[in-house]
Image 1: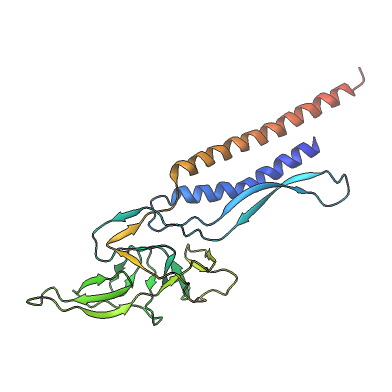
Image 2: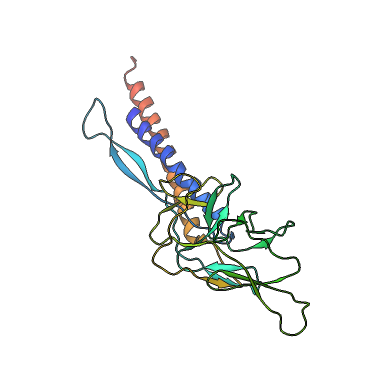
Length: 254
């Protein structure tokens, strides 16, 4: 009974990380630019210590790197919406005041006139500072990240002026992992570390948003499989207890 219960409890304990991941993915199905982080799998692992060499127990193996495969493209027609193409990421300022990266492109202007994402993180310019938008200006963001502002009240054809360049990086050759606030940072580097852009050209799709890369149907199926696996492991524990009680009753004197 002890070995069966131990292995079943180990499987339940290891599976909980996968259930947390699936629950988080499903909760962010409608989040713009959301990216799944890691793949997880359960594999048998040889137990170390006294006993037979054939003792195996389940162990969780994960890869915690952000998967930057593009999500569905949603055309919005809004001037401040941008969708990052290929594996382009946008530099923002985290709540801790350090540089981070994101794929979220639902930009807005806060009451102080500073450009930020829909989650409230200040967008960084190519020079490494915040981007201030002139009051009442109409904004045009190009495919390469230049931000132009024009005065809609100006008579005739409005003259656009370049006010900033978005901090864009190609992460095709750089491994990124998620921070606690959901933003990205460079793997195996201190928080706030910048990185050199990769070989692929950075580009945007203006007036569009990238949807979540989570497949809701696939995630729901995996979550159901996890629920059934949990029920199966609990059933093993109950059956092992029943077998142990049956064996103990046979040893009792009549």
